[in-house]
Amino acid sequence: MNLQAITVTNAIGVTILVVLFISSALVRQRRKLSDRVFSAMIGITIAACICETVSFWVDGMTFKGARSISITASTILYAMNVTLCFMWCIYVDLRLYKQKSRIKKYYSYLAIPSVILILALIPNMKLGYLFSLDENNIYHRQPLGYLYFFSVFIYLGLSVIVRYRYYKGTHKAKFFPIWMFITPILLGSTLQLFFYGISLVWCSIAIALAGTYMSLQNELSYIDPLTQLYNRNYLDHILSDIARRGAHVGGIMIDIDFFKSINDMYGHSTGDKALVNASEIIRNAKPQKSVAVRFAGDEFIIISEAESEFELVNIEKSLRNQLIKFNNEGRTEYQLSFSMGKIIFNGERTIDSFLNEMDDNMYTEKRKKHCRSTA
Image (cartoon, rainbow, N blue to C red; front, side):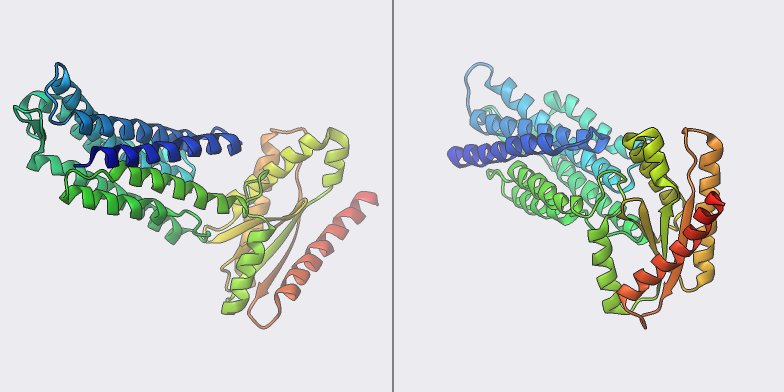
């Protein structure tokens, strides 16, 4: 066991995480629950790197208090191991579904194994059935202690299942780099599982968190910061893919009627609020396997796996129903109205003509509304 190597490895992990924490705090725009969970994961990993270094340094030491330090440090490490992987599952769910209700619904039950494993550590401090210290204060992992390593693999596997089910049920870009997190941990945990005396797990987790964070920054280039819908960059990406595959899709272009009047009458901050409201309406109305994009200004586009214009008509009806619901709620001083243009892309026309025809159809409806308003 090379104490200097272990100390350096964990020091590198702590350094990576401190830089990551500062960087994530600087660019974070909103204190979302997922942000707080990610920050907590960073904090736990920093503490674990320090704790593991201490446990290795006191291993085999016989000074007064060394045994208590060793038992306490090892107990904390086992608890952190389980806690961090459970929090990773919560983080994955929050990043993908963005629903706190899902956390209460599912993860209160999924937390039970973690709670049991953590509570089992308390009597182990006396009984030593998970890990023990001999008369020379040397650490020994017991067979039951391997349950804690296996719990890591189980929770990591669960996060993969959550991600798979999410992307299977939605037509969304696979931005979430789950393997960037899992791969380093699997390698580090497997090596440390079979070769006691090397320290790889927590430094691997530090690398995994940093890799995950950096990869997630790619998502920011595809998300409109105001409406949280996809932006024009992402639309160009998926349209290129559609053209390459010759896919059969439908498109609906949406424009907010009299948006300039809302800006002029209530101010630009209220105009921004109207854009957010419009994006919520679109998000609630669109089919599951579709993509909503803020195209430009107050224009939006829905790209759906529609096989016929009938399906687009149903999406249009859903949008109008959501509009009626929103306006009837009276939450704002303004009423929202959409002009829409729809078209089917069957691979025979170009992407430019697909967008232009949507735009022309939308403006046909918009001109009729403006003519009525000035009549």
